[in-house]
Image (cartoon, rainbow, N blue to C red; front, side):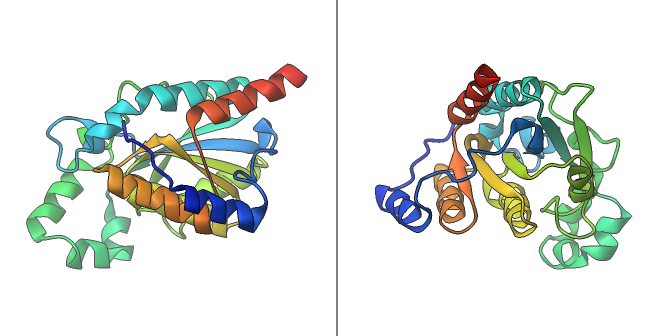
Length: 231
């Protein structure tokens, strides 16, 4: 698992701006969702094109936080990246410019709807009451990528916790867009995974400075337990 390091000067800067380290710690659990990004075979199975080994290490934290939020009345959402015709038509720049033809073909095949790579990692605790949402771009919230925003608005969700992989790409993109859509957004420091500690920490640092909260699994589980104990 990543060694999370947020410099003291960054913490001080955040507290100076907003008065305390976390400002989204008062949202009722039943208005909160844990959105888990791309914890699927393409990014997690050994030998896959974009394997992120650290993603396997965060599975216990992801499952524990999902279980705790469910018990408290919150919503768990599992996001799957898929490659389909919309991907090529409406996100052509990524496919035509930022990938070689060979890599593009491999990605398309691996992330087809029924392909091994697009399926959720079998170690995840996915329950019948959870949502499973497909996305076609890095961010699950950007226009045209998925119905995630609509599903959350229908359920009265106002706060979003982000976990999954990779921290600095799909997780960060989704988290930033969540904040810009006025969701109170938190990145879970030890339930996100990237290729390196440096990439992971750089995203967390930038996010807490400019976009929202950063909190650990224990912090969030403890918050839920306090709410339940007070009921």
